[in-house]
Image (cartoon, rainbow, N blue to C red; front, side):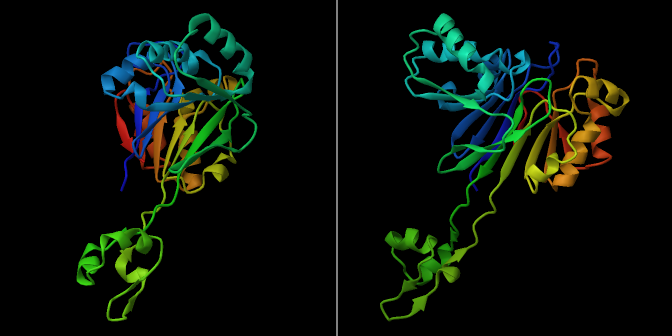
Length: 304
């Protein structure tokens, strides 16, 4: 099975602390790197985690609060200093379009590579990215500014070849792709062997949902049904639920409710308020509702 991983670069909320960096993640699938949000310090974390700058071809920005996007221009500038030539795509709320252009002209002129800005309507659920490996779909969220999450869906893969059967029937290597595609094999003696006897089923496609800053949305789980791994902001404990509602954030318990109702395989917590010196209280609250919950922390890597 090809790697499908989430690298945590930052999992803190807006107020800087010595414990956590601002929000940023890298999603890795089939040797491709996709960045999700780009808070301050993202470049340092890329260095610490040994992630290659040149492999990042797409950046997704969930919303225009500084702890999710203030690191972007610095990263674009560094790409230029590293001699990047490959095109970069930036998906961000449409409200950023004009300012993004001005910032690039002011801070990042003459980069030496092309940057495509793709405006996102955060109110729509829509596939915004599609390649041979996956699709990325927007998930509308409820925050103080236009905001959306991102749902990464792996595309189905082909069945696995049964090497023992290939050897038994002495099938040429040149026929492997045809067999994976569903064609059978006819031996020189005229015996037909169906593809189902020569293969085992493909791995089930995996999915990863990144739900950035948002109030609790009782119907959100319907958009995330069956997701393999869900990251959902968990800024507060239930003790501060009024504060969460006021600032359009969620509690760990509410994140767990979304994961439970969606039938998620795994829940990742993050975007912690600076008031917590130990996030174990958030984890305990979430696990009381959804046992397969985990705290994120800088430099952690999770398999989807």
